[in-house]
Image (cartoon, rainbow, N blue to C red; front, top):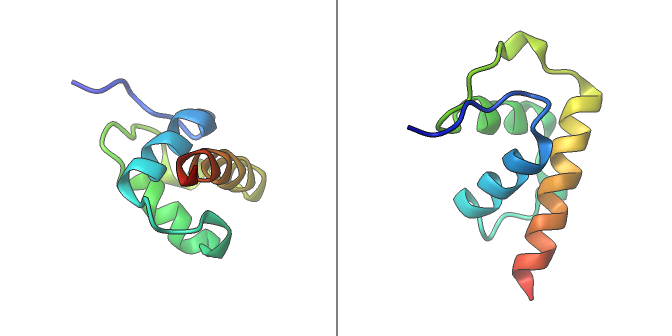
Amino acid sequence: MPREILWTDAEEIGIQLTEKFPDLDPLTVRFTDLHRYVTELEGFADDPAKSSEPRLEAIQMAWHEEWQDAQG
């Protein structure tokens, strides 16, 4: 069983989003779509209403960093 993921787990979320969407540039993703992607991750166990713009920004930046590393 995967570990529970919360909104504050930006780095872990970034890793999982990079694995799930390897060809998607995170900086092109709207926050409404990012919110959905996060809440649909396996192991996500937080309240969807607890997201905020700063949390989504942190997740997007963590995802972007992971995505850049994966691009080689």
